[in-house]
Every structure is written in structure tokens, then in C-alpha cells.
Length: 427
Image 1: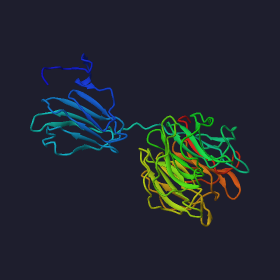
Image 2: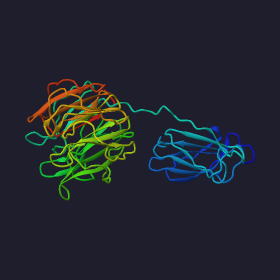
Image 3: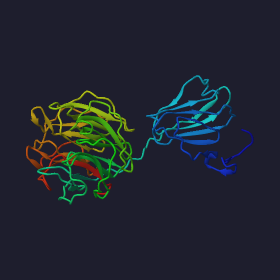
């Protein structure tokens, strides 16, 4: 570096442009696994998909400045590695490993001299990560009784279940559902009476169910879904009749726009009739379910904030299937009711904001299976419908500490095998 530039630097176009703090912020966000940086520049480093090795200049002068910033708050998942390219870094030669592994971090590097080399002037973490508003409403849709349904019932921010809404899309049961885009939902799969399907139906932030969309992934029933990351969703597990009947452990990711991705190779024990819930604000868990006929599992599979499904974790609580789940407390989940080897049960298991599922708690309300649940009112949950041997339309509210209330008289058509999902930021 020679001469004094002050608040002006030489931009990429060859013209002198004034920039804040004397830096030129490179507009292209770095998503590659390697990048070579230059003095006088600031860089946005997005490690959502991979780690990134950042190679510093091979020569530098006192006062040279480089700033790198965690663009997507993912350095805690995929780190950055700094290659000092023959120069020292904080007094150590470039054989030393320099890594940053904290989400939300920014690093302001200044070159000192040949002895100390590059020195971090600042390596601050932005602690206050923006948090999306909590969803306020919910919707139950599809299901079966004596026949298949495509009707829906909206749930207000007060937990009151509304009357039947004329159905949209193919009537079916055993559908999965997840949130996406922060305030919308999507239903997937099911049994239309003649075949298993993979179609989806999007729920707007007004609670309007859209027409069928041809979907990718396996045709399946009892696939479950949950939100993860920021505005993303995941479907996983279930049972398919494609290529021979079999339980599944594959998953499909749902992007911010509600587009369902292709099958991701399965992890964990394949099973159906399980449940799923979000936890920790940006992660999810699949739990319980039936690996094979007349077997009941209490296994769980955690989902990272990148949508990666982990291998089986040893289960806690009574193994069962056809249970219900919902989120509550803003960052926790509950698994409740279902069927085990002795019949239907009303036990519940709370899941903490770190994904730990607690032991059984004696149940409240009508013993049943094959209903569903969702978050409502920002920090509360609701489970509703299902079968006691006969189809019912009762509901049970869940407060913000996970306590399930007694039965509320049902509204809408009694049915089982339906889906439920939260939507809308507006109360």
C-alpha cells in the first residue's frame, strides 16, 4: 500500500469511489469453498452449504485492512478457515490453523508488520439475531371417516376451531404438513382411496388452501413435517406403495417459497405413523412411530438448522404410533396420545428447546389416536380430532408451559388421519 487514500479507494471498475470506513464492500456474496481476498475490501461469507477457506494476500503493508462477515449466521455450522498465505497471523506463521466457528461473527483484520502479521482488530459477534414473529393461527385439513375429505377448519389466535370450510384439492387422508416462509403452510401426500399420492397444497397466510400441485418425492402416507431454519420446512419418513410397499426414512426439504425438493437419502430407522415438531427456534425432531407391523418405537431423529436429519437417538417414553404433536412456548414441542401394544393412550412427552424428549406424563382428555396438532396464538398449541374407535372432533388446548387442557366440544366433521399446520403472523 502506498500513498494516502483516506475515505476513497480504487473500486473494481477502476474509478475512485467513496465508501464507508475506507473499505470497498464486494457485492457478490461468497458461497464457494475457497476465496482469495484483497486488502481494502470487505467480504460477505455465506457458509450455508460448506466451509470456506479464505486466503489472505501474499504480501501486505502496515495498515492494510480486510473485513469478513458471516452473511447467513452459519459459521457455527460450517466454519471459515483463514490461510495467511506465507505471512504471520497474530505472531504465528501460516502453519498454524486459524478458524472462526461462531455464528453471526465478523472479523476485522489489520496488517501490522512481518513479526506479528495480520491481527484481528475486532472479532465481534452480533448477538441479537432477528427473530420472526410467531405464528398466530392454525388449520386442520383433509382426513377420513366413512369417506375421504378435503375440507378444512381454521383455528383462531384464541384457539377456537372454526366450522368446516368447503374443500380444495384431492380428498385424502394420512397427509403431512409443515410451515414454510414463516407464516404459511403446506400439506403433502396421503391416500386418495385409489393410490398413495405425492401432491401438495399450499396454505396462504390467510388460511386459504390452494389447488393440487404435482410434487416430487415418493408417493406416501403418514409422512410428517416440521419447520426448521428460517422459513424452511422438512417432510420425512412415512409409508409408500411405490416399487413395493415399504416404510421410509427419506426426507424432502421445503424452501422459503414452498417448493418441495427431491428425496434425500434416508437416515435412521424407517417408520411410519410417527410425529414431528420444531424446537430451539430453528431445528426439528421426528419421533416415535411404527418400524414394522405391530411394533412401536420411541426413537427420535433430530433435524439441524440446515435440514440435516441425524441418526437415531435412544428413545424416552412409551413407544407408540398414530400420535399427535404440536409446538408450544415458542421453542418447544409436545408429543401426545397415540396407540401402543396395549391400545390407545393419552400420555404426553414434552420436548425441550434443546431437543430432549422427557419421560411420560399422565394424559388429560379423551384417549385417542390419529388426530393432529399445531401451534397457535404465538406460544401455545392445539391437538384435535382423531379416533377413539369412533371418529371424534374434540380438541385440547396446550398452554405455553406444555399443560394439556381438558376436552373442548368439537366443531366440524369428526375424522381421523388429517393434517394440521400453523400459519399467519396476524392475530
